[in-house]
Amino acid sequence: MPNRDARLLESAQDRDCSGCRLVAAVYRLPTPRPPRLGGPIIRWHGHETGNGLPMTHVWFTNDLRSAYAFKAPRELRLQ
Image 1 (cartoon, rainbow, N blue to C red):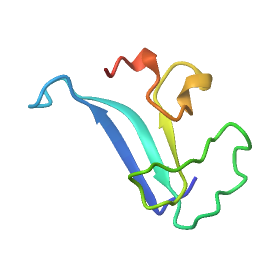
Image 2: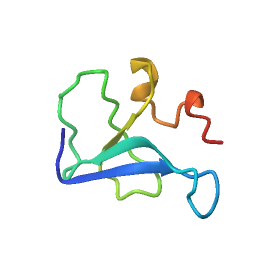
Image 3: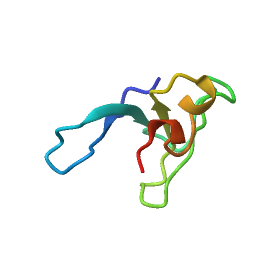
């Protein structure tokens, strides 16, 4: 995995973060060309608010099919 820009995402149930839980890791590449690492499983993509560099999420789920989704899987109940 890339090691240049990695972040952890937390979900909060309220403003004081009393119900925070770790939900994902995010990796952003330093170059515009994504690696072939992971083949079709790792889904590199960009966001409109990003800087155009490829990124991927690894959602902490119990299912590999949803772990690499573009958006937060429903099973995490973030909304």
